[in-house]
Image 1 (cartoon, rainbow, N blue to C red):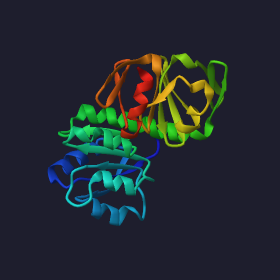
Image 2: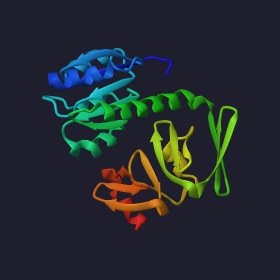
Image 3: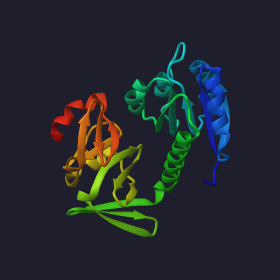
Image 4: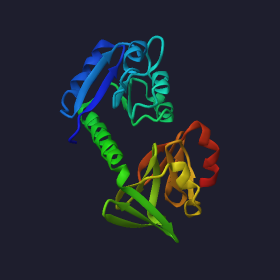
Length: 234
């Protein structure tokens, strides 16, 4: 990435806070804009100038990291860092970009950084994106290039605020349309929304277990408000 991203780290545990900070500093395109030991301390400062990225612990005295995220939905990318895996579903319900379980590992952190870069590159390109639907295909315009996809090849759709990522075997593509608006098109009738951030194509679903749906070996979370939709996948 050519542009530096401003980030904050919020964690009440000093060792965990320093661990996250040390990993963040390995990436030159991340600039630390603040380090806080509580959600309240962060909220008092960052509302004046929102960062691009927030690394948030969940279980903290007073306000939790999830509650902080709900108050700061305008921060583009939120990454949850916690010792409790059971917070995964709730984290994605508050539009977390990723969810990492403590103790943090450098290799897992690197995957999150790749996802973070991908998110902001896509976000920067959003103005150049357009798409059109016709028959059983979608034509995606990315600048001067055009990609034609057969709708039956799409594994799943992922919401990225005002645009949607389309995932296929051949790769990932992005259209300038919200997931909700895209699903209103009759061409996407074979997709079932399982989460605020995900809609899956029925014939690619391999397994439904607990709070996740598996497609091509990838587990996607099921949101609390979308559990009834799973009946459409059976």
